[in-house]
Image (cartoon, rainbow over all chains, first blue to last red):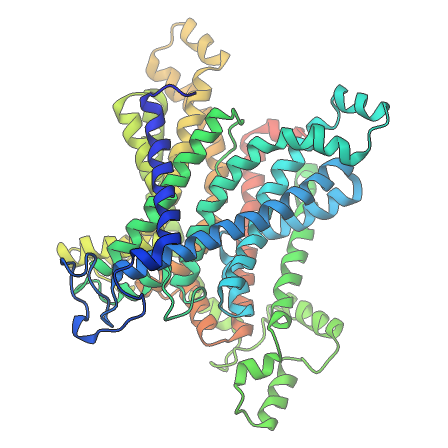
Length: 275
Length: 309
C-alpha cells in the first residue's frame, strides 16, 4: 500500500468521483445555474449549449441543475441505507453467530425468506404497497440490505468465538459486551467495510431503479432514475436527457465498485462469490 | 441422492411458507384503509363494502390467511380489481413471454461470458484479460434501465436494424435479451475466470501435464469440466436476477410478460394482481434454485455426501 502503481489508478478514480459526488450534493444550491424545478417552456428539449451545459428537459428545466440536485437523493439514499442495514445486519449477525441455537435459527430463516425474492423485487413490492417516498425507498432497500452484513458478521463471529483468546477472556471473567468489543468487532470490521462499499453502489442503483418505475422520488423533485424515465420518451429528439443521468449513475456505481475491489485487496478480505 | 433431496426439500418448505406469508401481508401493510386506497375517497359506501367483502377484509386476519393459502393450493390467486379477471389467468397469459425473454437473456449472457471468462482465466494479466474484466465491471455497474435506451438509440434509431419495442417477429427479442443478459454476462465472466484460474492450480492438472497430455486435452478434459461446475450454480442464481430485471426491461421494451404486468398492476394499485405477480416470481426463483441444487448434487457427488452444504 502507499506506492503509486497502475493498480491504484481505479481506486483513485473512484475516490475522485465520490468526492465530486458528495461535493455536488452539498453545494448543489450554489453550483446549479438555475433552480432545478424552474420551468422555461421556450427552452423545451433544447440541446446542450453554452447557456445550458447539459441542455433542457421537455419543460425547459435545466438538466445540469437537476443532475446536481439529483446527486443529493443518491447520496442520502446511499448513506441512510448503508447506515440502517449495517447497524441492523451487524447486530443480528452478531446475535445469531454468538448465541447460535434458536436465535441463529430464527435470524437465518428470515434471511432465507428475504433472499427468495430476487433482486429488487421485494423493494418494488414494498414501495408499491407503502406508497412512493424517499423514506419508504430507504426502508425497502434497507430491508434487503441488512441480510448481507448479517451473513458476513455471523460467519466471522462463528469462527472467532471458538478461538483460544476468546475462551481465555471468558475464563478470566470477561462479559459478552467486552468480548464483542475487544475480540469480535475488530475481526468483522474489514469485511463489513467492503460490504458497505458495494452496498452503497447497490443502494444507488436500487433507488434509481425504483424512481425509474415511479416508486421513488416524486416529481417535480429530480432523481437520476426519474430523469432517465422522463428522458426515455424523448430518446429520438433529445438523447441528452438519457445520457446525462445514465453517465452519472454509472460513474458513481463504477467508482464504488473500484473502491470496493481495492479495499477488499488492501484489507485482505477473503474473496466472496458474486452476489 | 434421496436423503439429499429430502434435506433440500426440508430447507425449501419453510422458505416457501415465509414467502407466502410475507406476500399475504402486503395488503395489510398499506397505510390507512386499503379499500379507500384502492377505490379513492369518492367511492360509494356500497362499493367499498362490496370490495371489502370480496377481498375478505371483513373477516379476522387468521381466516383471511387461511383462505389465501387454501386458494393458492387450488391455483387461485384471487381476482384482479381493475380487469375483473382471475389473477391466475392473467399471470398464465403473460408468463410464457417472460420465460422466453429470460431464456434468451441467459443464452446471450452465457454465449458472451463463457468464452470471455475462459480465455481470461487461461491467459491472466494479458491485455485481453484486462479488457474483458474491465468490460465485466462496466456491465455490473451499468443500470439495465440505462443500457436499454442506449441500445435502442444505437440499434433502432441510428442503425435502424432492430425494432424499438413490442414482441412481433423474432428480431424483437434481441434488444431486450441483450439488455437483460448483460449484467449476468458480467458476473458469469468474472466467476468463470476465477474458477478457471483456481482449477489450473490443482494437483490433477499438474498430474495431467506430467503424464504428457497435450495442453488442449488438459484444458478441455481437466480444467473446463471442473471449472464450469460453480458456473452452473451462479447461472441458476442469476435466473432470479433475470426475472427481477425483467420487470424494468419489459417496461422499457413493452414486452408483454409478467414484468410489465407487475408494473401495470402497481400503477393501477391492483394489489391482488401485485401479490400474484410477486408471488409467482419469488416462487419461480425458489423452484429454480431447488432444481439447480439437485442438478448440482447430481453432477458433483461431493456435494451430495457433504451434509454441511
